Structures are given as C-alpha cells and as structure tokens.
Length: 144
Image 1 (tube, rainbow, N blue to C red):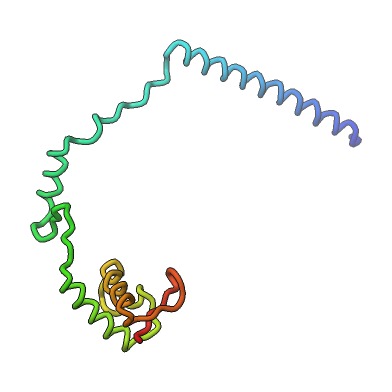
Image 2 (tube, rainbow, N blue to C red):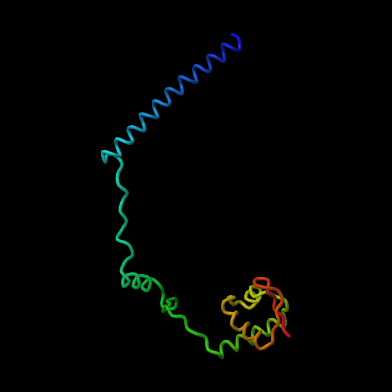
C-alpha cells in the first residue's frame, strides 16, 4: 500500500468515528433535556436541617462538655494596672538581658503570648524605658 491510500483510509475512519460520536452526543443531550423537563430521574438535593440550633441549646451543649476550669464566661476580664505594671517590669528585665529581640522572640523567651505583651511594651515605650528599631514585624526592642 502506498502512503496516499493509507492517508485516505485513516481519514475515512476518522470521519465515520466523528459521525458516530456526534450522534451519541446528540442522543445523550436529548435524553438529559427530556429528563429535566419531565422532572424525572434527577432527584432534588437533600434538604439540610433547620439551621442553627436555638441559642439556649447551643450554649448548654459546650458548657456541659467542657470542664469547669476551661469554661469561659464570654467576657474577657481586664487586667489591673498593677498587673500590667508588674508584667512591664518583667519585660523590661528580660529585654535588658536580651536586647534586640522582636516581640515574638520575647514572648517565646518569657513563655507569654505576644497579645499579652503588647500593652506592657507600649507602656515602657511611652515611659521612654525602651527604644525601638525597625517597623511592624521587624520591630526590635532595646532597653535605654
């Protein structure tokens, strides 16, 4: 067989395959439209529950599961100024021994979350006991 005959046979087989494929696609599309219009085989999505449970039930469930020591009242208690001052003194001592650290490093070193350290550090800066270098997350603290 020469190459022209082979090319011709390949083209004929491709065209018959495409005709058969397009026929099948049309049939499938028609069946899908018929089912959709008749409300047939496609089931409606399952309904979810009524939504959130009432507030009383939601509040009772976690409170019953949590131990007494771990329960939270929903209100955060404010720290007294004495607590902040005491923590500020601890922070100042730590920074004077470990100069040039970020608040994350200070928190890790002292075993305290950075959220707790923000106010005492702010008070120390306002009192001009600390000086800062850098900005935002790159801020480093040094004792004066």
